[in-house]
Length: 413
Image (cartoon, rainbow, N blue to C red):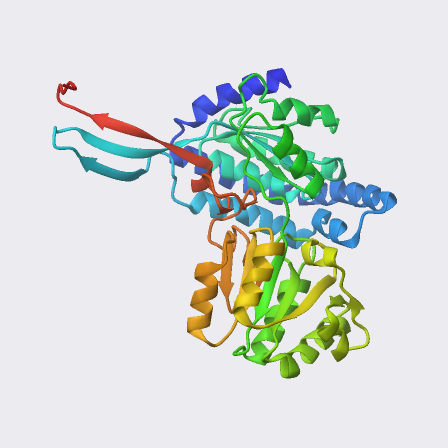
């Protein structure tokens, strides 16, 4: 681990100066290698899936782990999309002149070495490696044991593509052990060689990282996302959004976990929405008014309102208008992603301005909480804090800045 830190720091110094064309060539080359290695990736993933099933992992976790030809192609396409993005390194954020003649510029620079600790999702190997490279950072990846075979093949593909473009061999490194002690060493910073830690995984992993890390952390603890169906919501639109937000992929952090329905439209909207969900195989846990519309609804406990199910389960509550909906979200939410469905622009504007979450949407599914859907090519994760990065963490969010001051001999009196 110590040697990995040293190699990463040396690679980061070279990457910070790498031309855009060279980085893009590496990304495009890596995409080609991933496509060429599709059979090997599928075979490795099959081993991971078999082991995960033996361990009794949930359906949602298995879905996170699963790779098929479509997902592998999306991974390769993501690398090409990142290559097509503007290079943030060296870009000028702002500039101004002072009365004394000094010219000041604020310029984007890489963060340095980024440690990514993740579970289950093997596509994070490609997404994280590509985003770090494009933003001029070296990466040290520590994947979970569940995806070890898949991540290794993907990592080897990335390295092959990067090296073909004469990029540093250690631009992206994969920790070769699943020993939890390796996580502890990364959290300690590898003797000052890791600048930022990004955890992607369950609550216990992220909580450990936030508690033990001695370097800055980009993280979210949970994705307790809400859909609020307002009294002025179009029912057919609400049906489509609620079904997609909950059931498109239940294991992603942008999956809706709580549905709030305005009591002013509960008579017409609530029974239909609940029936749609249950008929599609989703377990509904509701308050008293929700249970009254369908006998199949199970009672919701206090804990349900603050639970990230990551499964085909949703909690449903009837609220007295937008104010109560926003109070509920503020009390039980995780500042991740919330959506309002309404035809009333004034109501929507109040929701968007007031709800304190990283992503707020109007008349759209919470499953759009994704860097790729934001045009970022991919993401390392969704940050819910308020310092440095918030929302999808893409190439710009993986940079800092410095001030470049040009003078003509000025001294300070």
